[in-house]
Image (cartoon, rainbow, N blue to C red; front, side):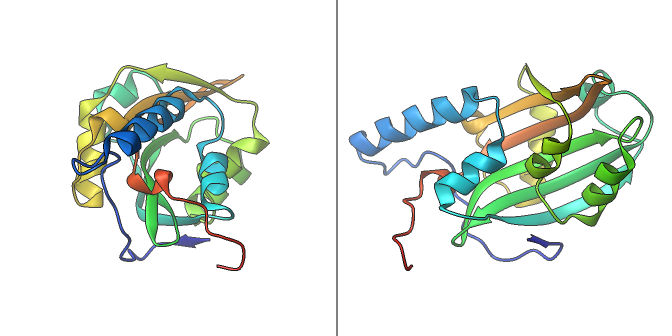
Length: 189
């Protein structure tokens, strides 16, 4: 499910100053796992939510002017810039800023990206991919946090490149949100 209209969702920093020590330790352990994993973050979100998640497309456009960090990694001159969040049960699980190189992108993947109908994680199942983690990219995080209304959280953020056999295709900066710590709804909720 996707939405090009912004819907009010609960968005919180991953860690809260009011966390009890035991909860803070649990959150720290969970965050360490999230930042280290190199599989589908979308599938992790679905597991945590206990079912499908909602894709909210906050901004999406084709651009030629991109930050130097993007130009240094991705080929070509045109890119899809896409700012999204994944949410479930009224809570944001994660915010994402993606740059997708249009050069060499399969037509069906480009069409589905532009439609904003599904998370990138579902589209990647069509491609053989590898994730290459990059150093923190403050300019990308600032762009992401500015678009989602603030709540900077560099400790809960990471940047990586999606690489296919044909070369790098996507650069993604993501910030995990408090919704990743939700308790799964009980059956029947």
